[in-house]
Amino acid sequence: MSQRSVPSPGIINRIDIDREDPEPADCLPAGEPPITTATLAPGWVALTDLAFLSYHPDRDPALVRTPRQNVTGITLRRSGGRGLLRYAPGALLYALIALGSGVLLLMISPTDLIAVPDAPGVGGLETIVQTLGWASRLLGIVLVFSGILVGLGVAAIVGYWFASSEVALVFERGTADPIECPTDRHTGTRAISTLRDALSP
Image 1 (cartoon, rainbow, N blue to C red):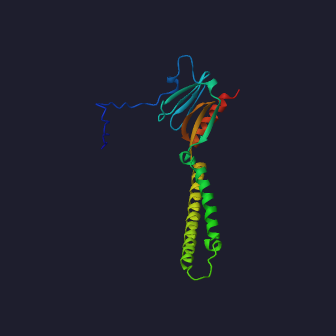
Image 2 (image 1 turned 90 degrees about the vertical axis):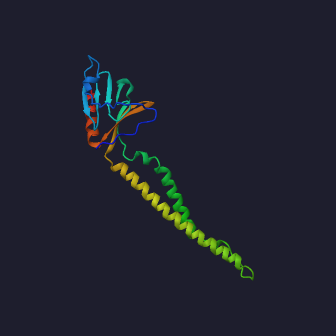
Image 3 (image 1 turned 45 degrees about the horizontal axis):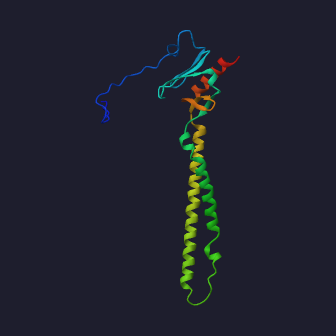
């Protein structure tokens, strides 16, 4: 049984309209036939003498027309894990600093730097130095292990980015925002090959 979504307080009534994927020829003006079309997953791209047309049902707007003179390049770009990938440089820097600091704290103890004289009444100072040494070793262990864990996390993110089948066919437009069509690697490779053949002189 399908569940009805709870309407927003400002909406009195609503009609959901089912959309069917349009065909490339139906989205072009009369007298502008497509030179070639390529299927994406989902959506499609089409090339005419005047423009690139791209359709992706989950994009807003779903249908984008770009004049050919505005397109500076077409790229098939990895997109899987890209949201996490932007945190990788900062995480890697933290891992390196944590590892370096942790190893340094484990190698150098406050007891090696602070000489406690062998004299009456310095037992409190010796206790403080020993406590500092214990805290230093504990902090060093925490930094080393956290650095290792963060480093492994960065490696996992980068590995997922390389191995992921999620890609995007990207129409580059110079300094303007690119137009992205998310798809899978196999379909995207076939689509960019089709467009390359059609653009070849």
